[in-house]
Amino acid sequence: MREITSENFTAVQIKQIRKYLKLRIMEDNVTFRGHEQEWNHVYDLMKRSVLQGESHSALLIGPRGSGKTTLVNSVLNHLSKEADITSDAIIVKLNGHMHHDDKVALKSITAQMQLENAVGDRVFGTFAENLAFLLSCLQSGVDRRCKSMLFLLEEFDMFCHSARTQTLLYNLFDITHSRQAPMCVLGITNRLDVMEMLEKRVKSRFSHRHIFIFSDEKTRPHDVFADLLVELLTVPVTKKKGRARKKSNVSDEPTNTDTGISIPTEVLQRCKVDAQQFAALEPNFVEDWNAHIRALRADEKVLDSLEKLCYYTINEQIFKDILFQVVGTISPAKPFIDTTDLTLTIDKTVSPEHKVRLLQSLSVLELSLVIAMKHGMEIFDGQPMNFEMVLHRYTKFANTNSSTQSVPRPVILKAFEHLQALEIIMPVRGSDSVHHDTTASRVQKEYQLFTLTAAAELAEAVKGYRALPTEINHWFGSLDV
Image (cartoon, rainbow, N blue to C red; front, side, top):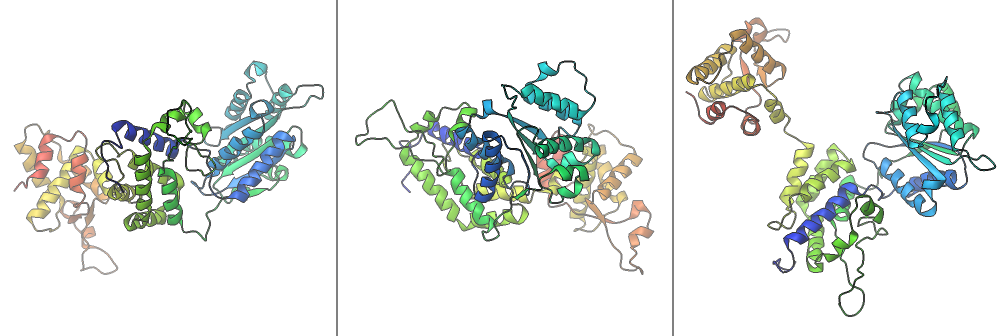
């Protein structure tokens, strides 16, 4: 890798690369990789509905983060290049978390069909009557044909929890079954048992077409993530056309949707970003950047971290969030991604310090009792402590600091019991009991011995604790004998 100097990169160059990578990672929701057969299946269903006026229904099933929504967006993007979807079809998107009620769903359907004025103050007896009226409003021409409609039902399983919400499914599937109007209903879910949640009347109208999105068993997940790292972080090199490198008003756009390593034009247009701004990137620095990314992919530490990540999750969106955080760390002072930054971000994602967050969620009184217990255990060489011993150390600290408010003993005892319930402190088991009983259970609660389970995480918790009084911070930093 050639030496990096101020000649081949500037603050503007770094800013542009960071902007490009963030758009590539977070905003590109139409680039779909793999699962060609499933992609073609969904594409064929939607294409026949839009172009030929057919009616279909199907379920797209796969774990979270497998790319179900991205697949649908990719299909719609490619379909828009072959047909004028805006005039030939209507896309209605519903989400089971938001549109679980029929009234809310119908209101959203009316708004997405842009038929609020047609409905007005009309009163309908049933959901079916209302939906039939909406379809009749879309009919036009001599043959009274209706526009094709694409219903995309995200979180499909949430529409199946009650009979009221299944009325929506029944009416949509009934339209596709009886071919009242050209309609494609695609349910998207991560539940494999979703068919068991449907009523018999809904099942009878459904086509029972299932499209599964699962990872390839032959390919190791961490190899997929390693290739994805290179794909998402690689910046295409813009080369000038012609033999002579002379200035020209026309420059090549750094988009290459065929290889899938850059931002599609549709994404740039949606984000209102001019592609020509990326054409000004210095080719020498871009080549060095791409070489660094390839070296990063071959680093053993990175591969080990990716393998560790795959033990916890294979969700692609989580991996994108990790890359987004890492890209945010590059700057003119540090123009490349450090291996340490990537591995630490992965470690924080897959194994966050739950005890640190738990300690930071405590009240000031509860955290003070934990600090008092830690000091006492340091004095007595790690020996367990009871409530009276902790109370003595906390009271001694409170009396020496006039700003600390006095707290009644029952309140302190309740806070101590809360620490036990959170398992920040654990009772010490005795060895003189039969039937697996403990000595602590036979001792008065104020004198039961406890040990601190979060001693190692206490320093980090105190450091990141918001609005912690200065006296308590100083008390933790010095051993109060």
